[in-house]
Image (cartoon, rainbow, N blue to C red; front, top):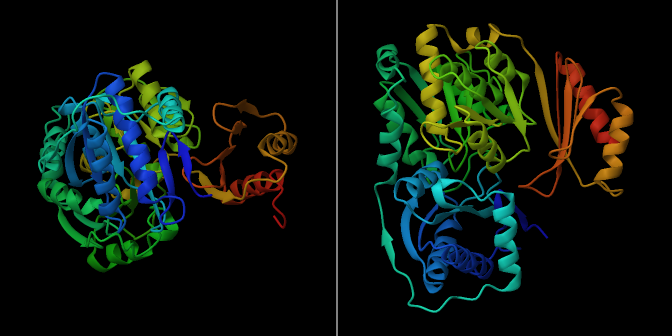
Length: 451
């Protein structure tokens, strides 16, 4: 079974576990879920995956049959949908997108009032309603209408930030190489960069879901973007994932710098203008802690998943936060990961410092982070955690999400993925060799042979 349920929504392999009948059942239940809480109007959108149109049509019909009114936003980024739910005062939203997962996957992401993803308790209540067989309340079927203005409103909110010096960005006339991975980023990223005065050299702009490489914006997937940076003499390269909530960077030499630096750059931009708390997840690099420390701020960590970070940000009044996968959350725009926001904050930092990307990276302590995944251990995760404690003695322990063990200059985080049927093993240290050695301990603790 590939069907996964978590605060990241419902994900599965198309035609195996995720089929139109499943989409219909969950979308209808979501309509009932919102109606029971006094809402009625629901945003609906999708990314560029080939299965998206038929799944979106199934979801629209199901929501309407449940009595909900549907606002169809078309193919737009996930953060655009979140902002639309907030700005239009909608009850919630559904985005048909598997985000960074490979092309054979698709998913439903569920957004609640205020434009935030369902938190753990809300998600549990919703999934319980699905399992119990949601009953449509009495009343007429809902309506379906189209709204083509969501991207324009998203750009308007970002460009209206009073404290962000966009004139300085425009004055730099950055040359930016851009990889939209044939996803929904086509709908917003070129327009944003051009509005910011950039000369844009794009690749993979055809929004057909035929990803030219693995869609997760990891360093090993950004080779063609690095080549584009070198061939065009670009100041930097930017890559987004298919639903545009993550941004990865390539420096002026064509070298991917690691997606954690996106959040670190954003933190430096924001705290220089808007002091306040910072929140990120347990798997995020220490480069974010260093960025916050430069402005006297502390970083608070949460379980992995946007919903967890957003919940903590709201509770603490955090000005900026996110995840080390390139997801940046700026409270002044909306409480959701947002690659367009990240792009603007990165360019503002570079404009203010007048230095290339590589110089900004090298101006702070460097770490090596290794992100791996392995199969679910036969003996179970708790046995694996206990073995890992034995292999990494004397560490500070955090059990918010799996097990994170931290020493003074290094850490390892082992947790079950909410988006794939795997266990993630992430470690960071002062050297690549040390980080790899920690990952090897994590794999060994989980029973993986030959490591």
